Structure formats: C-alpha cells, structure tokens
Length: 254
Length: 254
DNA sequence: ATACACCTTTACGTAACGTCAATGTCAACA
DNA sequence: TGTTGACATTGACGTTACGTAAAGGTGTAT
Image: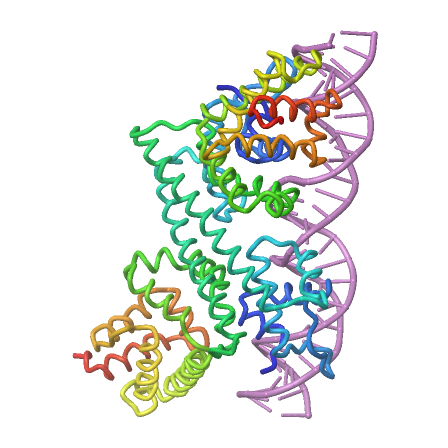
C-alpha cells in the first residue's frame, strides 16, 4: 500500500504539516518522491510512524526519537516491549492522579483533610522521572530494583507531617555529624548520636532495618562518589567518619 | 501556610519560571507582594495551582485554563468531578493503546496480522476529541449519550476493510442521492436506491436497525442545521428530499 | 564583611508544529 | 478544452509554554 501525505496523515491522525516536518528533520523520510515531487510513503514508513507516535506518547522529544529510530542497532520488537512497560507505568501514575482527585473531592465535601503536599500527589512523576534519568538506572543496577521502587513509593505516599519530620531528622543528623566530625572520635557520644539519627532517618525509607544493611549502606557512602561528595561537601572525610561511626554503632566493626 | 516561588514550586513540582509566567499571564497571581518585591502565595493560590495542573494534565491550553479558573462562575468542586471523569476516559484510551502495543508485539511475532489502520488505534483520541469539541456535546445532549458512545467505539474498532467499504458506501449514497434529486421524485427508483444505501451505511453505526429510528434520523437531517448544511451543500433542498425518500422507503410517510 | 542562597525584571532562545502565501498537479465536469 | 477544486509543493513567519542567561537586589549565617 502506498500513501500520499494526506492519506497517511488521516490514517495516523496527524497533520500533513507534521509529516513534512518529520521529513525535514529526518525522522521519517518518504519511500520515494514521484515525478511531480509528491511524497510517497510505503509499508516501512507506516510502521516507523507508528513507532514514532509510540515514543511521542511517552513524551520523548523528536530529537531523541531520531537518535533512537535511526540507530542501526534499533530493534523494533524490543522497543515495543519497552513501550508496553512504560505505558503500564503511565497507567499507574494516572491511577495515582485519579486517586488524588477522588481524595480532593472528598476534601471539598469536608469528609477528610489534606495537606498541601498531598494536593500535588501524582503530578510529581516528572520530578521522579528526572531523578530516574540522572541516577535511577545506575542505582537500580547497583542496589537492586525493589529497594529503589519501594523508597520512591514511600516518598510519594508520605504525608506532609512525615515529610517535615524526615526533613528535620535529616537536618539534625547532618548537624550532629558535623559536630561529631570535629571531635575526631567515631566512637564518641556525638558520633554515636549521629549514627542513631541516621538509623531513624533510614527507617523512613526502609521497610525493615538490619544492622548488616545499615553497615553496608555506610560503606556505600564511601565507595560511591555521588554519596561521598554529598557528605564530604562541608568537611572532607565526613563520609568515612560516618561509616566508622555506623560500623561501631551496629557492632559490625570487628 | 505561606510560600515563596521556590517553596511552592518544590511543593507542586513546577519551576519558579513557571510560577512567574503564570503570574505574568494572569492565571495565578500571588496573594501579596512583600516589602522587597517577593511573591508570596497563600492557601487559595495553592488550591488554584492544583486546579491548573489538573487541567494541564488533561491537555488544556493555559489560555483556556485562564478563562476557566478566572470565570466568576467557576465551581472548583464541579471542576474536580469533571477532572475525575476525564481522567477515567484518559485511562480507557491508555488501555486501548496498551492493547494495541500488545497486538503489535503479537504481530512482530507473526502470530496475527494487522491492517495499517489498526496500527494507529489509540492515537486517534485527538481526532475524536476535536470532533467532540465541535459537535460532541450538542449531539450528545440531543440524541443521547449512549448512541454517540457506541458509534465512536464502532468507528475506533473498524478494520481498514470495513472503513474502506464504509467510505465507498457513503460516496455511492451521496452520488445516487444527487442524481435522484435531479429527478425530483423521492418515490422514484434512484431515490429509493439512495435510501437503501443510506440504510446500509447506517447499519455500520447502529447496533440495531428500525424503520422508526431511520425515519427519525431523516427528520433530524432537516431539523439540525449542521446536517442540513452538509446535505444541502451541493444542491439546496437535498436534506428534505432525502427525508422524503427515507419516509417512503421505511413506509413511515403516512 | 563576605559568602551564599534566595529573590527580582528583562530579554532572547527553543520545540513542534500551525498557518498563511505563492505556486504546481491532476481528475472530473461543462 | 478550458476551468474548477482538491490535492501537492516550498518558503517563511507566528505561537505556546516555558528554559536559560544576564544583571542586580535581599536575607542570614558565619
């Protein structure tokens, strides 16, 4: 089957301008140009347009789409399976948003109360997405899919009060750690207090606490530049100091 | 609770630029400006931003959003119920798209075959939306929610072959009707043939056919300017002529 | 006193098309 | 056969919803 711009446009539900634009930027070139200069599209182009629209639906930029579909290693079948997964994720987010609207309706009816933070549940996907872009993949690969998933969900579902407490805890921990670092003694009172605050903070993210995991995380803070950079920002050496304090706190220091 | 641009931005997951822009175009003005010119947002603004983001999620332009939320008759609670409905619709469309991806995967595995038309199932929402914008609401109000819903679904699920046949049928009908009109006789052979083609065309959209409904639709063609304009486009009076032919065809003309 | 993270306005940049304008092509009808 | 009307073409400028500097004021902690 062969299509002109208009025919293909109607088939796929896009404008002729869009098809010309896609030609212009090189993501969908017609199979051939006929004698009068008309764009003629064939089977391969139909399938490619379908792929392009899938990516668009997922919010991928045309620039990225070009990189993807023009790549010689592009595997259409594999891409489809990824689309499928992403769409399921999108549906989950939509469900969250729907739940939020229902909650807000209940709010206006005075049945429940809702914090400001809760009011924006479900819109945050983009923020999480960005995080995901930066670190998500690596962290997932390194520390396991499940843990990341769970901690994201936990953050998403926190109330404002919980969130405030978490922020406060985090602040206290950082402050105590900074002071403890100056004493130079990871076994001292201040350092052990910091380690305890760290444990409290951790339990916000983790379902179950274990000394082993806590100590493992502490070691990670030293091994992973990102985390180390964060803790060493004010005073270099803080990451190692925290690790030592936690190893003592958990009794894993032998 | 009071918020500066950054605080509110973090809360809602939008940039500070976005908040300034919303101020600039007048869809979300701060509650007050403090002594140093800082934007300070309060409770009302938080709720309004939530509404704005709901509308944005549904793809409404900021221009429309302004019209909506600044309208003195704006009813937040009612808007929320509409959001809820729209989001459910969006989920349905997403499900359609997911089904399509699954189908396409099966296609690449050679398990089934798929027409070009089917390949774009689920992307068409926008087209349907546009139609909806133009006529949807009025038609729904006049001729019942269910019928419209069903005919949309039928179109969405048609195969290419069915669609082609439908288009062909529609063309034949128009042509025959045009010729019949020139004879001036709604009881004549040509006119009755046009009425029969019209019935065939109708059964593509309707689950069950009845003479009464057919005759009723014919009358509607005359009463509703939109339909009349369509049929009268080439030759004024065609809508009435078609109605008469159908009344005779169905035997409802006495 | 200086750093630093906030805030401000002004202004130009960008993505993905929409929307003319000016012109060429092709099948159908008078 | 000429004309009409629906198609196609290439510019080229407009639009939406911000992103991204630039240049500068504010607040508070060290």
